[in-house]
Structures are given as structure tokens and as C-alpha cells.
Image 1 (cartoon, rainbow, N blue to C red):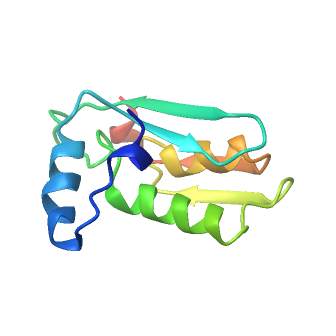
Image 2: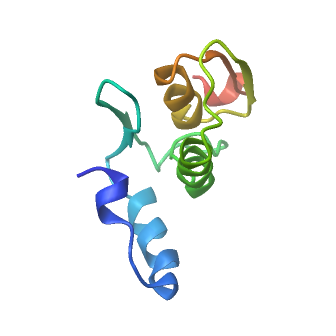
Length: 109
């Protein structure tokens, strides 16, 4: 099930929800694009010396915010520094943005 289908209605449940999400093998985000697009990222919570093994809650929240505000403008140039798993950049690319993802070399191994 996609992230959007699972978000708790009660704000006090958010911390547990995001903790559980970070510990799943994979997570899916359903993009609000003209052509239905879902992005699934496989996570590795056991990666040592890096925070790039999981999709952080900020990626989900910022992607949702940008979509709701209509800020995913096709052909826009986007540089995501410290992209980790790259979920946010992948969502923006699904909207037609030109995206460059960057991450520390040790996180890419």
C-alpha cells in the first residue's frame, strides 16, 4: 500500500507510523501525476555509517507538500543534496522535473 493510503488521521500516531515505515523492507509513494505513477524504494535499515538506507519522513512530507501546492513544475531544474534513497527526487522526476541526486560516496557503496 502506498504511503498516502496509510498516513494516520491522528497526529499523535505519526511518530509510530514513521518509525514503522522506516523499518519496512520497501516503501511506496503514489505520485499525483496525470499518468498514475507509483515509486517503490527498497530500504536497508542495517546500513552502517550512513543514513541513506531508509526513506526519511521529510521526503514523504516535502513531496506531498510540493504536489499539493502545485510546485512540481515540469522542466524545472532540481538538485537534491544528500538524497539518500532518492525518493523526493524520483517523485519530482515523475512530474517532469530535471533532477540531479547527490549523496556521499560511502552511502553509495
